[in-house]
Image (cartoon, rainbow, N blue to C red; front, side, top):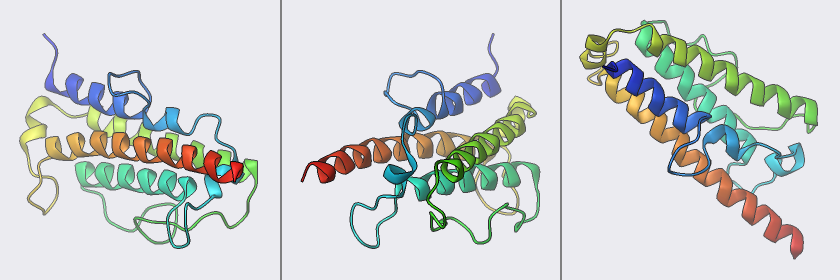
Length: 162
């Protein structure tokens, strides 16, 4: 019989980098995206794909931190939630931020994998949210932003045709 942790891991994997019924996952949504496309904004003041990638990395960090009871303020980038990008528009910088997302996902996944089933019902940190809810939400967060990125890729192509 599969554990609840196994199901939780399946959900976060399907949202991030495993095939699932919902279509493209987060990692798949940025496959073959070039830096210039990742930096494009659909309109002034809107986030770009690059910033969405870092935003999702941040929330993977936040979930991991809450699961493990770690202190705030240890994220690799200054600030929280949204990080304006790019400062330097290069393929290498874009690839480095994709690798950063993958690493944050790996660390968050390890934190979930280290839990027992009972931990999913416990409250994370000092809040009111259970660890199980955080895990469900991070999987949904990835799927939401994957869809957003898919739409932005189409908008980018349309803008290039005009």
